[in-house]
Length: 163
Image (cartoon, rainbow, N blue to C red):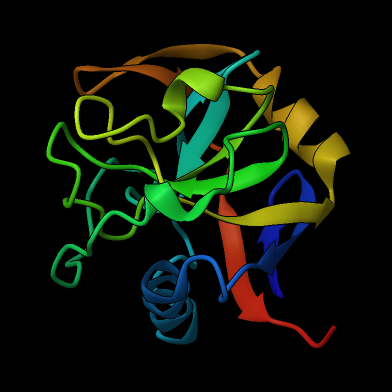
């Protein structure tokens, strides 16, 4: 389990290493390295998802590891409260950015090679009220990016916690 201590409250994530071993290992390396500390939720879209793990308040990015393979075909669904990897149009391009689904987003699920989906690798088991609060913040365009919170929502720390 990983606790995200944010400027709006804590979110506890239960990771699913059995379904997404590569993704969980990658995420845990970033947690253990302190990579997420000081990053923000930089893309917030109510009734869709909140995305973080890539940018600091000044919209600068940290150096990431090599991209990982997309494990979206693992049977897990992009349901409300699940944690999935963000990526570009290349299915195997995920590095550090992740998102928490604010509602069921079945169009993000794996549906074959034509729709490779987004790899779910965990679920918020505490703090969905925090996710709801983050999803409701006012957003703006910043550095050419849409849906950026006006007041930064900061990941103060990400840490592994016992079950």
